[in-house]
Every structure is written in structure tokens, then in C-alpha cells.
Image 1: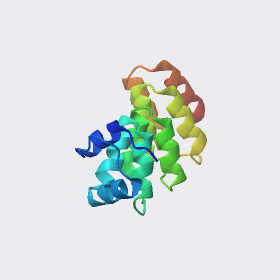
Image 2 (image 1 turned 60 degrees about the horizontal axis):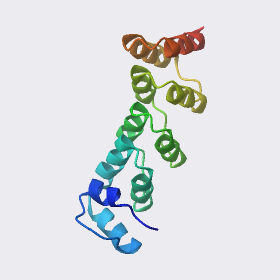
Image 3 (image 1 turned 90 degrees about the vertical axis):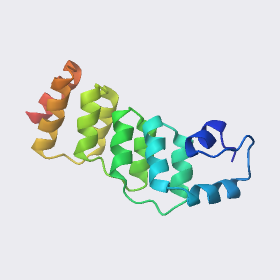
Image 4 (image 1 turned 45 degrees about the vertical axis):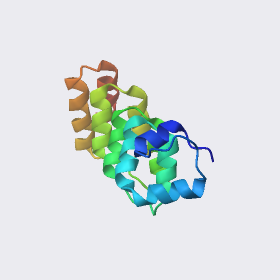
Length: 143
């Protein structure tokens, strides 16, 4: 697997040339994996997220999930869900606040029907951000 220079930069590795995958994984394991997963989720770096998750026994990381949702990185959200993460209500709220209709639709389709307050909380975020398309979608879910 060839690792991009961007991934080296995000991890803070001063490596001007590609290194063997095994050595790279060893370096990733020696750094703060949770911090790297959150960095990957925030920036949308799917390659880094996959590396960090494969380098450790991944457990639910709520911050990574809602950072990816808030920044519209559906591929990262899908990866996190495939590894056991849950589409928590904060992810729905943050995507609604940002006006990310496709992310909101994805989270709603993935989730088992959330409780009414989850919809109301997300609706409040969409209203605050004046995202009428998301407001309409969430209001329909509340009916």
C-alpha cells in the first residue's frame, strides 16, 4: 500500500519518501490512534482512517463520528459504521446545523428510527442554520 505525503503530514511524520507499510503501521501504533482517527474524520482522509482503524482494535469513537458527519465525509461515516460506530444523535444534529442534506439523509436511512427528541434536536439545528430543505425533511419525519 502506498501512503500519500498528506498522510505523513497529518500524522506529523517527517518522512520525505514512502516507507514500507509495516514500518508505517508501527509508527501509527506508537502515536495517539484516537487523535489520528479524529484528524482523519475531520479532514475526510479516508486513507488515514483506514490505516488507523486497521492498526488497532477499533472501538466506538463518538468524536470521530460526529466530526465526519459535521464535515460531510460520508465515506468516513460509512467506514466508522462498518467498524461498529453508531450514528448518534449528535451526528444528526451537527450535519443538520451545517446544512448537509445528503449526510442527514444518510444518517436517517442508517439509523433505526431515532427517538422523537433526536429529530427535534436536529430540527433545531437546521432551523438555527436556516436550512429549509433539512427543516422540511425532519418535520416530515416528526409527523
